[in-house]
Image (cartoon, rainbow, N blue to C red; front, side):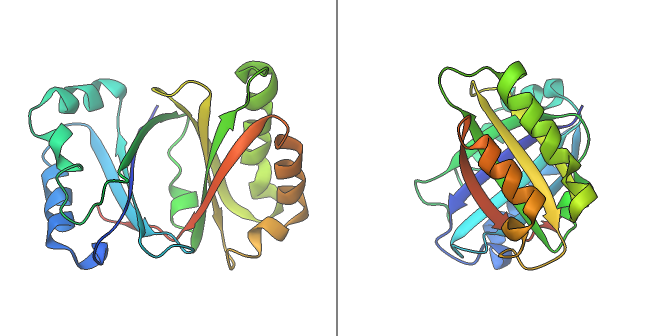
Amino acid sequence: MPILDIIAFKSKEDPKTSTAVQSFFESLKKYDGVQSAWHGVQVEGADHYHILVFWESLAHLKAASEDTYYPTLSPALPIADSTLLRRVFEFKAFPEIALTAPVTDLSYMSLKEGFNFETHLEPTLVKFTQLKDVGALGAYWGHSMEVDRLSVILAGWNRDHHDAPQNPAYKELVHAALPVVKFDLKFIPFEKVF
């Protein structure tokens, strides 16, 4: 199962033209088990930059994390301010269809107290993956390997990001999930780096 390492931060300069970011991606290629890397700037919040690094397995990510160099890569980016956030998720399938869409809905879902994953959140996540039947280009979810009660959805949309939440099936799912989870929703057009 693919492992997703999400690195997000407010950027001090244009990340897509940054030599530090390009050097970061070149350094990533040296590690065994790196499948691909994607990056994008948030639609609402042009200074919010997201890097997605996919690994073949948790063992590959752990091996890289034990290296003296990999753990220092993202914190050392000179364009990142102190808002650096890093999260690791396990996915059941590689979400390439969602990432190649014109815009990707990246939603963190934190399970509220009094609810459990198997009964309350997992059925909702499975329903989100069915959004591809009602307009999403692909929808996938992953569960955090480090933060208890946290999951992420990646859903690709073929239209303006303001239209996606107006989709009746999407809207219904979000409203049904609100009593159970806290959402942190972002819309990002991603580009594949390698």
